[in-house]
Image (cartoon, rainbow, N blue to C red; front, side, top):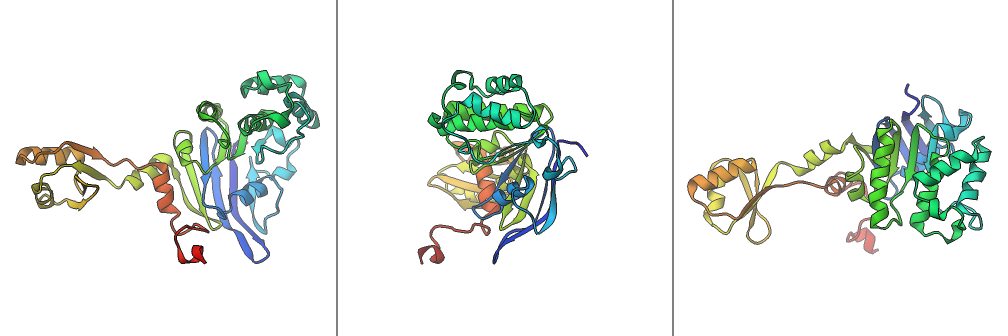
Length: 309
């Protein structure tokens, strides 16, 4: 097995009467960013803690390169992780925080300087970390995760607290880490950021896997192959229906057309002299796909009777 591969297989975990993990299984492969998403209570945090040996599973395994994290000598050389950007001594400078971590793992100061440069902290290395913004703490946490130059990385909500410039940097940085052949697992609630970053997504709900697929596959399935037509011509619906399309009203002045490609709609309306102003294929977002997949898996949802009680 490639040493960068993270394999989660059949994880089960209960906390008292609550089932946190109910057979969680997925693989994080090298060379791509894998998004790990799901509603609150889906089991994402518990899964990551089990991978790191912070929680013990009742059943199943979590392996890095075929071995449990707890069995790895110098584990930061195998899997770098960021679970809590606030987990630092606030009076230490960023560089001293990293030096302390490096020395505990048998790494030298040269590597500290390298990760400071990689994560854009060169100008802040001698500042007390307690004064950092959340976005800067995220960078420091990623620098710590990279200290051992590991083949696999696991990051929980790395976009939190990032300003627009930081988000752009983070997207490119995560993609560059995957391009180096690393396996990169990123848990996030920001679907828009994962859509531009991840090549693969694992969707969890109620301790199980709901979907495990390439982002492109999820977007294609969510798009549904329908077309949005802008027209005020009453005859448009009849013309398209005769051709076998399913037509439903949308926003004022628009129709949703299923069963015909955009090019076919344009050709048909043009041949019949039906005026229109726009024809566009629907392109779903990762957020659209996510909401559809997790519709029945959310622990809390506004507007329900239960939520109002």
